[in-house]
Length: 103
Image 1 (tube, one colour):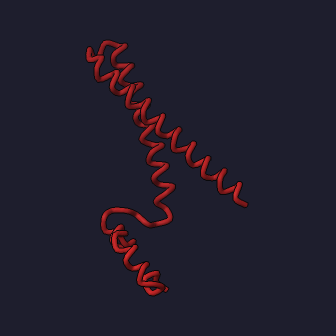
Image 2 (cartoon, helix red, strand yellow; image 1 turned 45 degrees about the vertical axis):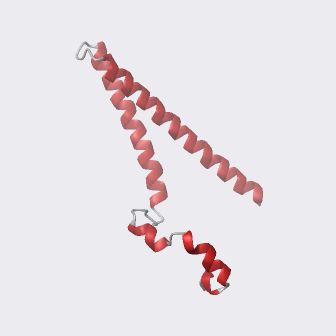
Image 3 (cartoon, one colour; image 1 turned 90 degrees about the horizontal axis):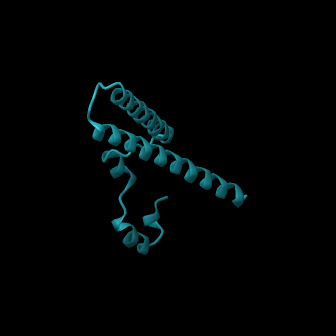
């Protein structure tokens, strides 16, 4: 049963809301596997940025590069990615705890 058949007010309210079918054509994946893949992709990006930062520091320490700017940028990118990962984890834990308190 569609919401639009319940009342005419619902059809006026839902006029500005995009339909789920439209979302899939815009690149939003609705599969059940998409959520774990997003988190694992974030985790792999953090690991990659930390590896890049470590490699950049090693290259600078060994004298293979003289560009301290790129080294510091890679360190900051790694730090920002890690902070994002921790914040996402904290939000997920908060949401889980709120759901557990509702029972």
